[in-house]
Length: 402
Image 1 (cartoon, one colour):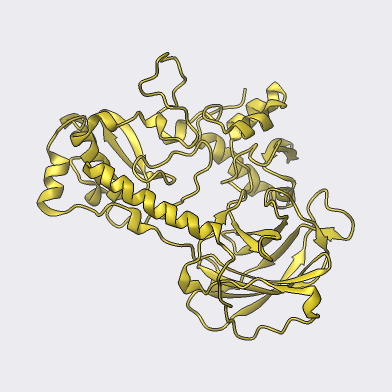
Image 2 (image 1 turned 90 degrees about the horizontal axis):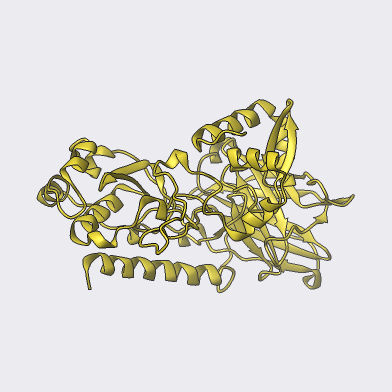
């Protein structure tokens, strides 16, 4: 077995283990103990508890369509998506047994207890019912609160002692500290091995590539860069050609005269090694896009190719079939605007069409598209920020509306 094949086998094994954890997300768990939590009232007949693993277990969760964490409630009887935004706003969206469906609950007072991972004391915060468009009178599918200043930007543990869904009451607990998978990353090279790897041409790695990369190794070029690994890339995202996690646009490297994107510097090491030792295994940069059709070795050779620059990806290419179906009913003018924006103006990781037909709204006279009705309130509340985000999205993906 070749070096790269061995690496891929290890990587896939780790991902398979992660999948088993995800499948058993609410099973065989222990109760998280958070100080100062009030007792939950109610009889045993009408009360259920979701027991979540302590943060030090690094319990992984599935990513939601808004970029948050999908949490099982009551042995997957229901779900919720927890969305933590940069300013510390905490949104809890209630979902059904099928987490793609919205679950309305009674408007109610909800209190969450929040603490940064590793800390002892939890801070209570009020989660106000903020109904989304379409929620029935007296019902809501969204609760919104504000994290304490000490928890903003940190991994947190959250406990909600009492959430009423129908006639049942649940205790919900989760952590944003996700399982790290650095063990699936290749080890970085150094010393004489690094010099030989980067500064000696071979296979598809040429002297022109060495010069274009500044005659540097990846370790030297990206020294000090902190990277995070996103294991749930969205359709259309560039993916690392080594781990198939979401690529980081800051980690690029020229090989065979073409620019590739990676999740972290050690993956550049591995790919350069592959380019030299197994050149036929390399695909075109446009093949490393989530949901992309393979263009290498095509019989017809007439498939459209995605530009190699990460900020020049056409949103019309490589769409998931469900996304394509959701966009099919748009007018020509609206489709052009959606193609130019590509992602939601509020939840910028949510691909337009991933939650059905995008929501079209007017913000200060300009047409803006959102992934769902739940984002409308925030989009209108901070109009300037919304329009700035749309402008940035259109500039980033290099597509102008007709």
